Length: 155
Image (cartoon, rainbow, N blue to C red; front, side, top):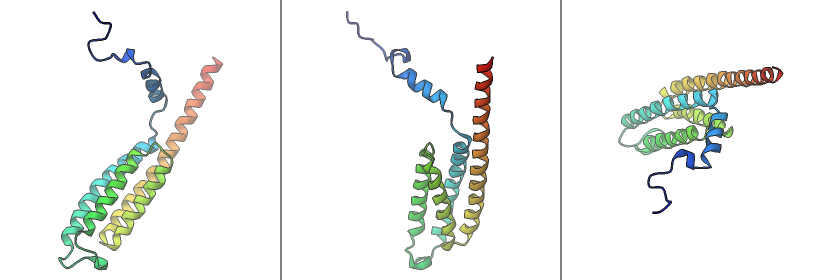
């Protein structure tokens, strides 16, 4: 008989599984990243629906600034793809800057449909609040972890 395993490898058989599991357990997701992904997720739905509304309201002979009728769908699709990419990249600090760019793009969409100024301002305010509060909570959690480790070392 052969010494080869018959079934799939057990998690204990993979020597690389332990460092990956330890790294995942040691670096919990920040509150700021969680809040950012929630805001972008809701915003994604609103942008999709807004693009459909703007497209539906565009006259057959063209829209604002002489843009073709399909331009709101393409612009909305580009912003949606950018939001999905931003959600996936939130583990990097520079992705938050990309989130600010998304907020600016949505605010600028108000030139295509004035209702988007309201949507952009609303989500821009929510984004700003979440970035400020999320960063503060992450700092407080980090300070609590340091204090807990210091306390454990002195015992």
